[in-house]
Image (cartoon, rainbow, N blue to C red):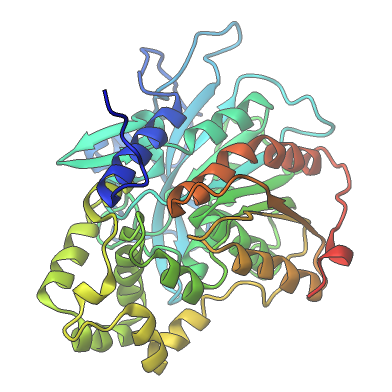
Length: 449
């Protein structure tokens, strides 16, 4: 019997990688354990409507960022009965107010998990805000939904909750975890603004505020906060770390892990074009056209019918069918004259300005940061992630830089995904050390320029 070689074709690569992502969750079978959330929230799901309408934002939002809009109990896919409560904890679905990149109020959903095991570090139980990696753009791809159904096949869309592993590892350390769905992912009425620096950073920081506002948790006003994210999540965690001193000085940030952060979108979008994760190019275009209206005339100038169809399909796609349906897609086939997205960026000042405004590394985080990137990552390109660490050092930040040494397997998405798994334990160790009050070192002296 012949063995499929994942290097042979984009379709074979896509199938192989989707299987690997699914297996990595280890959470395919839901149990019957119910996980009621903290009681006494301002608005419950029953008061707001049925569970099917939880993700529909109200017409009026609270005035404060991080204010809870509604909550309901969320059943985790993997759970066991325990002496002091269900393991790994009790989960609550949340909706809270944030502010988008245009300065407008926006409702964002997510989930909070109160761990059953006690925190063994010094001080009160900490809180980790987990910024998820790429999940897609359809509302059913929301990370809070993936905690309930790690592998979901809905309307032909394949959603894989690969971030659940990190959530459960953090809970096993005794840290409470809040997961954001980001702006527009889950909530109806707008598209997810994929890799948008301000939207992502604000959503992460306001998720912390929402978790701290939940009644009945073990969090206190002294609970330290950590940020954790890889890929899209690494960019959101990095943005949140930069924004925290000005946007959320009330959040007691102890440290932030930014894995494979897309700090320079010009470099990343060029690498994504034609790759197994070419869908990310469409998600980026969709998001920036929504958040920056000046991008629409540029889109109309270049995009052809095939491109419009691809963007429409991707607006409802999750990562699984983004891989299966668009692996190897090239932007030159989406434009009227065969121009690539990289060429459009070079030719159009409005596009360059939008992407330049997304650049990370111009503001130093006040808390220690750990930047990790695979040395062979040629999707969220290693060099631009390392550059973020160098830029932060130059700005005076306390940076731990980790070049993750893994083999070059000849497939961009695998080269990007493998360091997530191999470095995850060390990343969580580093973050829990910060949450326990242990000082962080700095690699800035050795990084150079």
